[in-house]
Image (tube, rainbow, N blue to C red; front, side, top):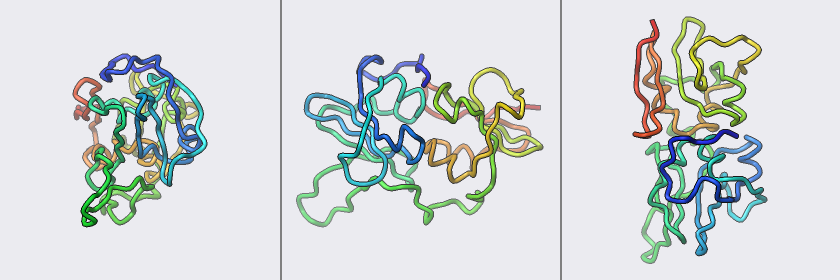
Length: 204
């Protein structure tokens, strides 16, 4: 997995962390982050923790899943889950009144799926970005369809790309949903690691 050069988290990049094995294997989306009382980071997919997990470095996680870089205020003992409806992290908390809507770490919620995106549509994804070896940086609307690329220009060979259904693209990178909705023909969306958002640019 790639190193994240635009480091924003307060925890050092080489810190060892635990990642759900299903998330590491790209079988599940990264939708819950917890820091235990000692400050250890744990990254989970849907379902009740604890789950089988493996160790890696925080920099590798932030490189493969850029939405993790937004967790600059996550303190020891805190947890957050990804909200598919709000397209962002929301705090996990213990309800004391019994009336709160508890945030739950879930897989992609098809009930909030935007009508303009077709979940089975095949996008072309740079294989090394898909595997986490490099960071996903660009989403392009090309005459041949949607392409998702890492750094290094726009030209790729077919051998460097993998067809992936849009639903699985968004499960892999939850922070891409809004960009995929916004990208227009002849334009691209580039991830800004400083501002943690997507910026549009012209490709033609």
